[in-house]
Length: 112
Image (cartoon, rainbow, N blue to C red; front, side, top):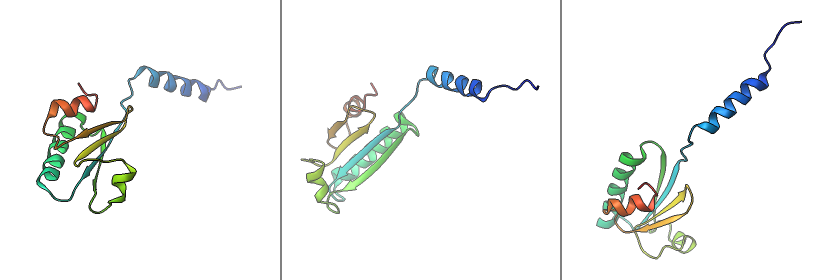
């Protein structure tokens, strides 16, 4: 009889290693804007800069123009634009404005 290593041992070792490594959850962000206004353009630019610097490649950013999808304003309860919604990781957070206050955005994303 050959001495074979059980595949369960390898799977168990992999599982145990994954528990010891901190898992970074991807940030899922939605930025609601109102057309191509100056505040919308500024919010997009500021947010992309913040994401690139602080989140590296660990984020998904969706930009939604409420002029093109006006029904989403009611569905998502958007009362002002630009509004950033952090979907993940929880808790869900909303940040309103042009994202020029980096400290406020970082705090809202729980990156401080």
